[in-house]
Length: 233
Image (cartoon, rainbow, N blue to C red; front, side, top):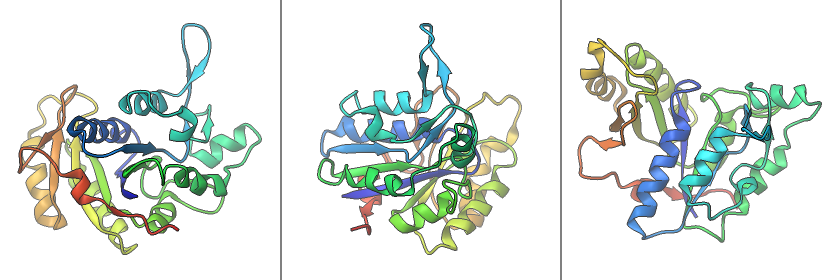
């Protein structure tokens, strides 16, 4: 099973949105079986009937055309919008570290490629004794970094690039996303070029507010070609 790991320079940069977008692009080609996995999800809301649901999880579920169970896409969910171990503690629970990993194993014989979305940023706590960075390092998938499009993103992106590379991982590239509409921000015209220059990486594409992902250099991004086989046995 091949895979990519999607992380972000911060929370709410649009990781889930972009992970779902990548899945949709791959499924549209109808060449490979695609899965999505988010090891833990915190931050629920109530629908009109008063039932709890997790918007991020729902977005991923729909992106996979409702073909896989929600609890396989994300096996561990918590109500509070906090780092997973903190959200779990608020419910007098703990993150199940073994389930973080066996949750991925379930996909192994079912899909050709798995997109794994991290939680928060690269150094966000994931369990009582590990961060997202530790989990991603164990998987050893190439990393896609989702960053904000606007002013300040150069610094945040370069810091995240250094952090990912310090783990010996391959950076597949950067996506610049505009989760909140930007007005009068001149940096959006030059940020991609500056990140490529100083970060020695490729900005694969840009997603403007409420618009579809647009590749920068080619007609479409070869997500499957950027992925590699999992090192986890």
